[in-house]
Image (cartoon, rainbow, N blue to C red; front, side, top):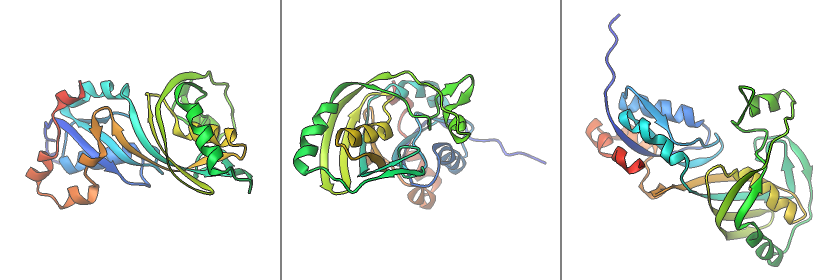
Length: 236
């Protein structure tokens, strides 16, 4: 059976990943839409998260590693008074509390997290231990000691506080786990916390405002889709 040759297309697609699919599934869908021969992305978003995902095609895949090191900006909703096994809404509920901090306490605590921070990666992560991702071990009930990693929170803005929900914007260095930040903020507020929603709005100089959804891409003619691709040298 004749197999049609894929297109040797090069460029960077700024994609607004929807909630409910993995980053790899989103990349595969984008690759099919563009009929691209080669594709990769510059850093995952959890399935429950949405926002900016950079899909790199062709020669752009050679430079995707540069964006792995880039600073990122997220908008996050933390549910206070609840902790889960994964640190987000996907996990089993471990504790619940009706105790809530005051707005004044929230405003006093958040600035403590700005600057260099030592963060222990979560078990539910893609970090590997002896060749296995930690999340696979976590699903088997296996806990592996993890060393703390140095990250930097450049900015931490309070967007809204309507108990039990706390909305923040975080500008951070590579390797930052917003789930862990949500848990740590909950601990500092003495009520516990977990990540309810997450949306990535910036990777390096790439902004979500310039991103496109799958629905919009599906309705475009091939030439219009190609016009959405940013140059590969922007990754450098």
